[in-house]
Each structure stands twice: as C-alpha cells, then as structure tokens.
Image 1 (cartoon, one colour):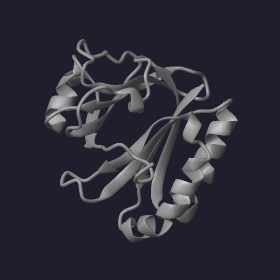
Image 2: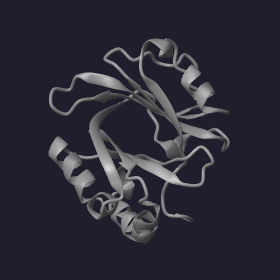
Image 3: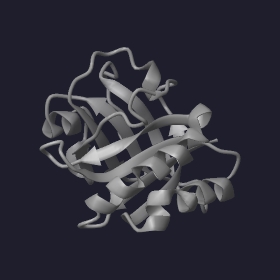
Image 4: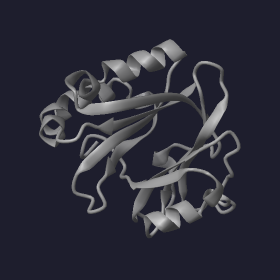
Length: 178
C-alpha cells in the first residue's frame, strides 16, 4: 500500500536540516526501491526547504507510522508537524516515470472528501487521493505538478475555489547524483 508522509519544517531549523542531510539520505536509501515520490517543499525563491514529502510503499499503517517517526529529520527536531495518510494512486506512475522536461514544480494539496481531479494530466507528475488511516475516508487530494506559477498549479484543479487548496514550490528529492 502507498502512503503519503508530509512534514513541515520548524521555523529556524535550516541549519539542523543541513546537519542531518546525510543521515536523512542514508535512511531513505533503505527505502529506495519503495519510494514513489519524494522531495522538499521550498520557499518561493527556491532557496530554503520548508518541508518534505515522501510517497512510499509499505505493508501497513503501523509500518507507515514507523517509517515517518524513525526518519532522522523528525527524530532530530527539523519538523514541526507531520501528516501520514494512505495514498490512492490515480495516475499510475512514480515521479521517476514523469516524461516531461524539467520546469517549475509544485506540491498541490486540496482538502475535502470530494476532490476534483484535473482534466489535463500532462503536467501532473504524481496524483493521489488522501485517505485517513483510522477509517480510510477520503480527506483530500495531493499532486506534484509542473506549472509556471503556484497560481497556475492551483488552477489545474477545477472547482478549487470551493475548497482549501494550496501549492508550494517543490523539487525532486534524493541524494545528488543518485
């Protein structure tokens, strides 16, 4: 089963994140064959990480919680908040299978039990419904997309005005050169 793990950095934790980067990558290396998507969210100037996402295949909800809570940035105090949800794949490909050229990329999260899917999925890198661990209820939609601006990323999702939807700059993650 796929799981979405989303962490938001603690204010002022950039230096700690830098200190823990090798431990983070080493930990993720152990899941390399099960990672579907990963990468940091960024400030608008693309200079500083603001959080991190991982979509990972794991055998159970308990394994997903263990994965998230054992991650070095979480244990070390980089993250202020963490969300773990089931991820229902709606696109059928990992981020590494995205055929598009590199361009500005965004993490888009829409809340609600009836998220509206984009009609045109050509610039969608990964796409999934978010399901709550406790009861499997649909609680939103997450996508990594390629778009010129955050506003363009949000506009890919029809009906966005009727729900809470946010887009954050995002980039492919992983150990450089891997």
